[in-house]
Length: 129
Image 1 (cartoon, helix red, strand yellow):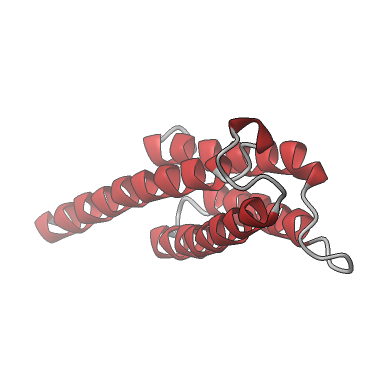
Image 2 (cartoon, one colour):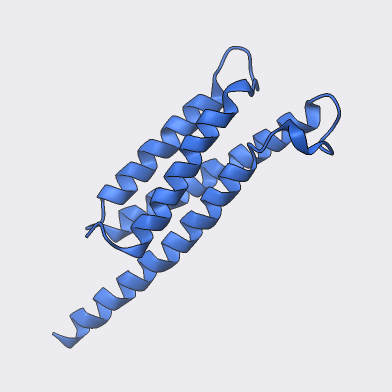
């Protein structure tokens, strides 16, 4: 069922990855590898796969956990990028790129809570049969 609350939280995390892709066009971490673009594409694909694997809750939790790990790594990489820019991290007009992975991590953690709650509900109903 796509109309569950964890689907909305996962969709918000996917939207955060899309916004990171849009706002992160000026981020140059490595000259040879477009790291941010690849990470955003992977996050959108794992989020979409997680949304459409609603019948397999264990796979949903696994995909959300992989997305959380990628987002945490992105937060670290973007913080490193901000620290190496001229002027330091004290200027707020530099960019909001690290905020989007943080929002995605929070949304995915909440989605995992609701997925586990559904899993417990299904197991309790199976015991009554």
